[in-house]
Amino acid sequence: MQTSQRTPRFIALELSLEAIRVLRPVVGALRRTDRELEDQLRRALTSISLNLAEGNSSHGRNRIARFSTAAGSCSEARAALRVALAWDYVGASDIDAGERMLDRLAGMLHGLGAER
Image: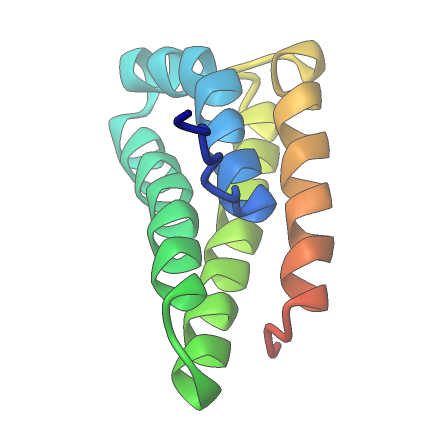
């Protein structure tokens, strides 16, 4: 009898990918209003996921460095959302769910040892 093995999931990485999915409409709206801000937000969100994946496969100081980079990108993405709101490119309801996810992710990164 063959048993199915589930691959353990890295919750922080899964949350970062969900944040991308939730914020996709915001990125699309920014593409039409402020392409530079759209590019910066898209790159920051991507960087979070990629650095989480790399950090999860790293050890020692390199692990902390990747998680710290992910934390910096998380801060950048959160600031980009606030900037988009300040410029009135999006409404608060457009970014609320994504902001909550990024806030939770920032806490997870702190718990993983990310340095400021």
